[in-house]
Amino acid sequence: MRSTPPRAVPRRAAGALAAAGLLAAGPLALSAPARAAGPVMGFGGPAVTALRPYPASGGPQRTSVAITVDNPSRDEESGRFEGAYTVTFDLSGISGVADAAFSAEGGTRSGPGAGGDDDAESGTRGGAEGGADCEITGATGICHGTGLSPGTNPLPALRVSAAEGSEDGASGTIRVTGASDGASFTPFTTRIQVGGPDLVMERAPLKQELRPGMTQPFSLAFANHGTRAADGVVLTLRYTRGIEFTERYANCVYSEDDAGRGVPVWTTARCSVEGEYEAGTAYELAEPLILRATQRAYRDTLVYRIDEAGPAERGAEGTGARSAPDARGRILTLKEAPAARSARDTPAMRSADLAPGDNQQDADFRTANTADFVAYGDEAAGRPGSTVGVGIGFRNEGPAWIGGLRSGEPVATVDFTVPEGASVTAWPGACRGVTADGQDRERQAGAPRYVCDTATAVREDADFALRFDLRIDQAVTGASGTVEVRNARQRGRLLPFDPDRANNTAALVLNAAGTGSSGGPGDTDGTGDTDGTDSTGGTGSATSGAAGGSSTTASPTGGSPASGSTGSAGATARASGTGGVLASTGTGALPAAGAAAVALLAGAVLRATARRRAAR
Image: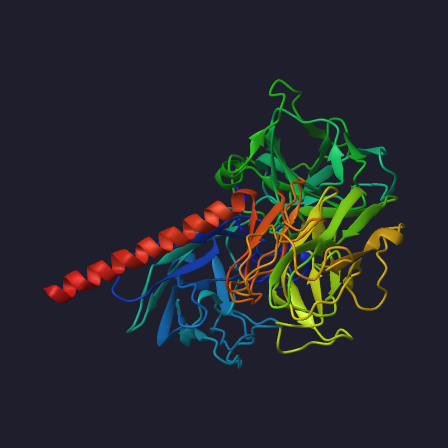
């Protein structure tokens, strides 16, 4: 069984791949909450940490055990716990198995007898403002701190190494408890073991410059560099929507997710392969997989990982996953690679990986392909003092999908210049008002120009639809504003993947010649209330039925607290009487409404309970 790697703590990971959640290195063990008068804090950390055996010469290799204190509140403004607290580490369970010392980083002190290393000098104390201060005395570690923010609060890392004289396979536990006058803590236990398998994924020889439709063999290989055999393995393949494997297997389960980007971006295959994978031995696929660049490929990523099979890995296979379409398909199998076998004859035991950081490899692909982002505008008419709703944006007419997963930057920006004689009263949440020359401005309503960023992924058939409400301040016949889809960076406005520059710009026209300035079917009585059908021609209803369409939202007061997201359904919007815009994206609006109803119901229950208590 492979546990959470010691360094895979619930901290905000650096890099876009971690942010996208490319692969979970393993589940964190979390202490279960308990009932108490004050807030109930929990602990998080690795369920098991494996250590390299004590070496015959030289010093032992240290491994970090990262423990966090978890404040269940999610209220960033008032959910912080301001009281003092104490966290106690009972280290008696690892006596003779491992030595421990707190890292000097983050305001800590290491304990006596734990040995020194570069970041844990005995008797030193660090200085992290607001962090806990820790030290070890005998078999007990004590951390004192004040204040716990909502969410995860990391404690100084506990550095552990195999104790001199410990045997391969020895294990023990560390029990973590907490105390405070204003809160309670649920205890947590983590296990430390000496030795185990160490599965190391080799980098596959892959061509990374591709053409649509191109295929290539994917020969995967790994080795066990640990001290014991692995009992079964799980091979994980995670790849973006522009590439695919030509065959699916009966012992793999497949799932898709958007990694928080609003469109299906990743496909994950988790394949369980039984057997013993011995220490000192290399293995490879019985036959290569075939990887193909699809017609929508452009910039894509493949991540491949090997882990020892265990309850956590096998349980994760059934979470949000679906089996291969052909359950009678072939079985993906492994074989021993033509390499020298180790003379070691070690029985298989489920355990943690000694170095989980080398279980994974990845590859980026560049496919010679293009995407055509086509801007569209609108037409509307109205009397002075009336408010009209307009729909603008762009469509991706493919063939490629575009994703900025590595950079984490928006794919493109819609740059909208407001027509003469009109002012914006409501705008989508993905947009912000700027000055005429593109500089930030404090007042967002009535800006002469708005810039609207996409998400970091845009499907090959996406419609990035944006709804604005404009007040007609004065009737200007044929007043025209510009709608441009451009590079998200101000410098270099051209889209590098779009060779057709001519359709990157469109117009929004108010009171076109022939419509008159007295308005049309969308004119109002000056209250600013519209029904979403007030523009003439174009896409005035801001309704798109294209699959993969995008959605934007704005607050009922014309603010922009939400960000636009590229969704899987077209956006349907209508303007409210206060100048706001409410966008609906398929089924997304129903869960939001349901959540609001639940919140209102919960508030009503709390108020009724308070009244009953007061009546007593």
